[in-house]
Image 1 (cartoon, rainbow, N blue to C red):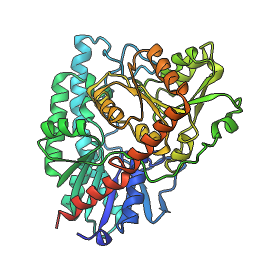
Image 2: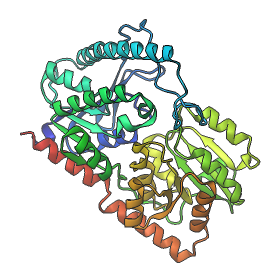
Image 3: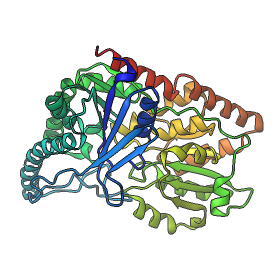
Image 4: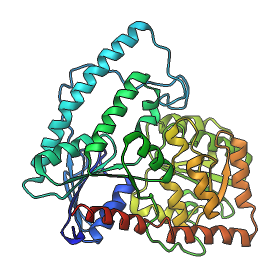
Amino acid sequence: MSPTSLRVVLLLNNAYTADSRSWKLANSLSAAGCRVTVVARAAEGLPSREERDGYRIVRVAQPRTLAWLPAPGLPRAMAGADGVAGSAPARRSPGDRVRDSVGRGAQAGRYVLRTRAWAGAIAAVLGDEPVDIWQSEGLITLPVANTLRAKRGGRVMYDSRDIHLQSARFALLPAFWRDLLQRWERTGARAADAVVTVNKPYAAYLERSLGRPMTIVFNGPVAYAPPDPPEHRFHALLGLPAEAKVVLMLGAVVAHRGTEQTAAAIARLPDVHLVVIGEGIAKPAIMAQAAALPHADRIHFLPSSPPDEIAVWTASADVSVMPVQPSTLNHRLSTPTRLFDAMGAGVPVVASDLPGMAEIVRETGIGVLVDPTSPDAIAAGIREILDAPPDRLAAYRAACLAAAAGPYAWERGVERLLALYRSFD
């Protein structure tokens, strides 16, 4: 297949407002000559159709098939700022467990029917236009992609951005249900024409669990030339003193990303302000927790940044922190997008000393690794970078930009993805 003739549909389980990977995919594939449609979920206040930067967006409501059926939520934690993804599920009585099992069975059946209806709604919106690639951006839309291929032809690409069934509350499900979901994912992945993931540790795990070869497309940075010296956008926006240093946390504000630990660490850093950019279920609780700290005036929460503005905001920080907690296998092996955003912006990182991120940080020399569970360790890592002499800071910046232009460049991953598309001929 020639890229100029490819019709690619990206299937998302979100409204496409802050999904940086999908934004990069849509822009890069469009620039390569593909005709790209992003199918996102409908959301209040957002248009059902948009034309943007050479591709189109359509938003389709997920059908509410059998919405009247009761269904249990995923397990909730006994502790944690948001109460949704702690390390131990709340105790359940035998009656609760029976009701949960029956409810989960009903939920599974409902999802099968909902998937078919969702695929039908998408097909109706797209009309008769042929599609070459149905690309599922995550587990939830994988059966939708396979159903659409059966209806309309084309190929299915599964972009597994996470080890989904070892993440968040899925990891707290009873073993029976987790195993059942694992078999369901394996069946869907084996039905796909190819599987893509975001880093080497994920690829190794998914090749074993899904029985499929993996193509790696890192969440690498798009080409960007950060200003030197950096701008002080946060100082201007927040009215910070000129001598203040800015530590940035970027991304979803959810449990186990280390926001609480970093907020506590700021107490040890009197000249430092923490800026948290993002939205998420945990944000109200974490904001309330931060507001009760003695140094609350140095902790700032901002809304999510549009993907095309992430680079400029990141480049305005002194340090980017990502102390992801070792609460699940998915977290331990993760390489969050903010790692690559910092790389592309020339900003050194303080990252979790966990198997996913540690290999990249050590290999490239872009920052400091710390114990993410310890506010003292996070503070020491931040201080190590902030107190570094000018030549060391210049070396961090050079290492970031070299890695961003080299093996982790977004364009390299897009080349691998396009080669995979062409292999379907």
